Length: 429
Ligand code: AMP
Ligand code: MG
Image (tube, rainbow, N blue to C red; front, side, top):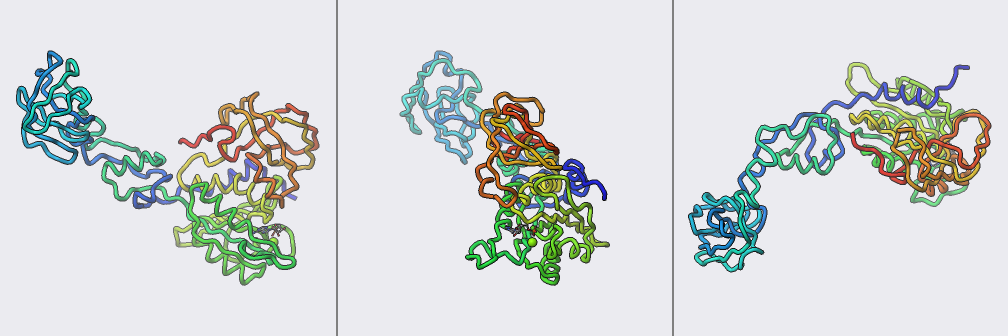
């Protein structure tokens, strides 16, 4: 019998198949979270004119050398207007935030430093002290100059970058798209989660679980289907799923008499990369690639063991990094931390075990491998891979190496955090 792949080896084999998807032009509204596929240059100066950054009066600083003056208001300027009149000696223009500075003026005095009374044709009394040339003015192109590169290819687009792309007029933008994923839950025992299960039946919880995990990873769900353990039904459902970037099949990949998924995938020409990984839970994981000849389409196919926690752990360790790699991101794995057990833990068996835990306290830098005295790791009373209910209390998974071992309270363990429970994940590439 050949040796089972360990987790790192299996993940390497997955990532070797997960090259970034071809660039696509998408509407700006769909670009959030994507990696930018082009350098973006500004088509404008921003601001487009010298503008006031306060509500007040545009003045000539020389008129306010004494810090006090009575000036005649010659114009009122609100944002969006174009000045029609220059400000001469002894004059001012009433001006609102964002409005262009009129010719002749070189500073703005905020309304709070005036008597606030000046309307066009009337005087305004200013007593705010000496005024510096340039005061309260944001110069044209101070933020961005036309022709300037504002974002480089490779940047991950957060809301901030989407705002910036809007500022420079991008209706569409070239990105590495987020993978579109099909979910197929298999099993004769499954009924939709909205149904009341009959004798022998259970609800399909993996479907909604996987859909949520896909969305949390930033990818999109293109298809959510289910199929019975029947060759023809499976075949038809898998064929629909293969048109996506990734197909996640839950159930039917172990050694049972109705575990028909690997053989059906083989019949459809999906090339197996590996089957089974040295891990608990999740050992029966199947991974392969569908790349029909004479097409550019490729679909990464994961056969995830049907027990909900096996599905979850396989997704987090293998599918999530693959989705990130397809989307052009380098690090899709969840952050790893070091912590210390709050209680003893008995590990037994010949596979590394991912055990649900709660986390408290603060952690050291993710991935640094340094132990943090502050991160307390408490194993939950988990009943095994069918026990999703206990997982809902977990904030992460502790990794225990293969072998029989009694871990003392205080022992150092590696944990994978689900969320920011142990600090903010380093999601910034
Ligand atoms: P399998 O991998 O098909 O052998 O299934 C392993 C276990 O997971 C069995 O107890 C199944 O009933 C259960 N299971 C399979 N698919 C699902 C699903 N979609 N939702 C919840 N449990 C499932
Ligand atoms: Mg099954």
